[in-house]
Each structure stands twice: as structure tokens, then as C-alpha cells.
Length: 329
Image (tube, rainbow, N blue to C red):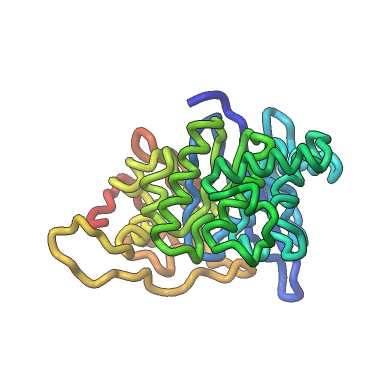
């Protein structure tokens, strides 16, 4: 891979509530290299989206209380809001989960897609619209000049998502964060959007962070994967290695809970028992131990650090760090 564009070091984001501090992101560290696609997976509430929002400086009302977000060597947690506005949309772009609520219903699609060109490149309205039409065409929207005159409610779900991707790419950012880009889309449109993201990666050389629940999407899209649970990274490594030989019981459990088309015999799905923990009052030791089928006595006492397990993977687990293999995923 190329040079490291983004490096997150021990990032911590909390939300203050009347019941206590919600530790939404609790010591997350990872890096993103130029041209690669990194997948971030985990159950709802594990901290995936808040990690992305913290990178963009959009975590409010949450507050970053520790760590660094280094983009090309510059710590984004120390930059002013004015400086962050210059970076957002120009050097780091984000595709949000729901394009219907992310697009403004009272402005035409072309005006919104061209907004980054007006703000960051100083183009006038006519040239910005021309750039927006060109990008709408590149992301596969038919008759882009006519569609640029439409409002978001006149677009289908897939076209709205394409418009969001076009908006993110108008300034050719170095990093694209795609937060659940295929949520609520049918499988045919999902495949088209994922093909589009692959094309973006090849054509523009944009490094991509793909946040998703769908492990199949990660398998087909990402060189590396990072698994999160209770605001922490519990496993990371090359996607093929993590999926073939999971080193954390949570990853093992996720893989067992999805259907396999290549299985010799079809068996009932095996859901993960129990519920994710309360982020205000986390259990002592490993946060996953109340749901873990492999737990040992130490798991309920000490919190494991993310350490190297095997040649290519990192895992925060006392069981696998002791040399136990997790089989049957």
C-alpha cells in the first residue's frame, strides 16, 4: 500500500448524560493508507459511526476527550472549526447513512452536488453546476443535466445515494468515509453502489473507510477489516485472514450468525446470545465476556489490550493470546 494518510491514535469520545458519561469511542487506534479500503464492522451502538463523526469533527454533542486524529501528519482534534470546514468535503468526504435526510429537500440536486465546488474551489454557480452534472454522469445517473434540476424526493433511493457519492467526489478527496452506504437499498441497487465505490477507488485513488453491518460486503470490498465492540477495537487485520481464522470470540460469533451459501448443509443461524453492554456502566474485564462462549476466569477480571495474535492479526482477547484456536466459525 501507499503512504499512511490517516492515523487515529487512542481516540476517545464521550457523550454526557444525566446518568453518566457514554463512552462511545474508547481508545480506538487504526491507520488508513492511500488507495486502500478499510472495513469497520460491529453491531449497532458499537461506536462505528461516532468514530467516523469524530474524524470529521462532527461528533457534537459528544466531546473528544483524548487521542489524536492525524491526517497527513496534522492533528485534526487540535484544528479550529474554520480549518475543519476547509478539510471537510475537500480532503475528507463522508457519505451519510440516510441520503433522504442528508440531502436538503428544498434545493435541487445539482445545486447541492455542486456546493463543494462553490465553497472549496470558488467556482461560480454556472461552472459549479457544470461540474455537478459531469459528476452525476460519472456515478451512473442517466440524463444528468435533466436530473440536476430535480429535487431529492424525485430521485429513487439508489439515485439519492449516487447523488451523495457524487457530492463527496466533486473535489476529489483523499479520504472517503462511507457510513452504511447500502442501508435500505434492495440487493440489486446495493451491488451497483458497491461497484461504484470500487470504481471510485480505482479511478480517483481515493482511500475509503466502509462502515457496515454486512460482512459479505466487507469480504468483497475491503483489504483490511476492523471489528468494534463497546467502543473498542477488538480485532483487526487483513480481511481474508480475519474471516478465515477469527482471533476474537466476537468476530467468531458474528461469522457464525450469517448464512453461508457455500455450506454443505444448511443449519439454523446461531445468533449471539445476550445484548451489547451499557456504555455508561461497562462490565469489569472484557466487555464481551458475559456473552462469550470461550471465556476464562481472567476475562471477567482484567481488560485485555489489543495485541498481535498470529502473523497478521491483532486481537484483544485473553483466550487467543494464550494460544487457543477458535474453530467452527
